[in-house]
Image (tube, rainbow, N blue to C red; front, side, top):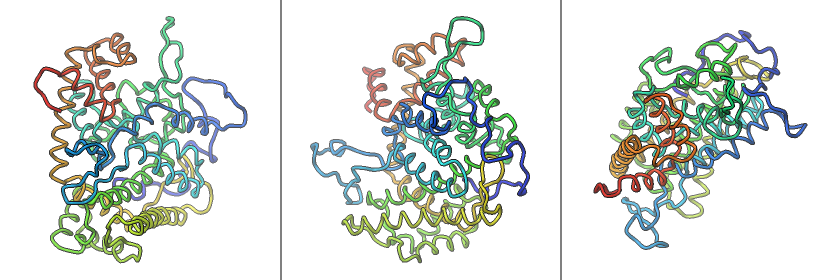
Length: 460
């Protein structure tokens, strides 16, 4: 979530949905028969995302703490890698895939408690990060600059592009009457595509902040976007998308702190001292809780520090790991129960779906979540070695894009070679190259960069 605690509608203000789910919610862009009677449309959607190559690729994309082999630290394989702070390196940090799976577990249970179809919410959570490029948000910023001539880049818009176009699953005859067949991606239901759309507007269309880099659809994907948004209020997210968004916030804020502790980057005692606290609150107010004052952010952090389960130390022993895992569980439960209770208090005990309600996030829970994001940002993402790594990653992606632009279709996967050959103009060809880069894992981006730039004197 991004500071919007209640998205601004009165109870009972129902637009196009009259019950939990209607037949129109189950429709697909390209109609197709069910293979096995008795399975719901949303169960089919969930299975398609789970079996997709795009989801598997997230295993090779960094969440916060990168998985670094011992050899990268100058030691032989099989030795223990040690962090700059003296801690043992976490050999199994979270990836974008594990984050998506954890987000899906949180979202499925929260959604079910509020009356959503649990499979539908799980689809949205599993799909929400599919479009993230190699090197996470750092890569997203690089691709946004590279893609400026063709409409920019945004991970959420790329997720929709994968679901509705790029992920090979269903092909249908082209509407131009030729024998050509075009991809409709996973061909998910209308409700599933809507639930996976965190930002239901084009670039520059965010109502309260037109300059925001966040958007959910590229111009050439508008046909399917307009189809699944038929009847939906402009710029408003469906209830399942709101559940997905809060589940994402909960999962990454809590787990990023857990990973920081586990990897030895965060000493929890620092959160008791100035000026460390002031730095965290300034960061939280600037990036995660716009308009929040230091006093209420301090109160939010202190509420967490005062809990008996809060981890005030971590030494990597089995007991410490168990205590840390309990703290993670307690935090997730705390944030989800706060939202469930507030939403039920506003809307009552019925099933809340689609556009019959909006998720209510209490300000206290929102601030606590924002403070955790700032803690991870301050002590994990802002480490000096991380900034050096990010600078090197930007060079890799920039040079890779330059090489592909000069040599394409060489270097492109077969899927993207055909799209490049069919592209009608330079902007469309650039979009294909951006699609290719976005599909790479961290390792495959480095490998392709090394292959295409060999002999240029660039060390990766």
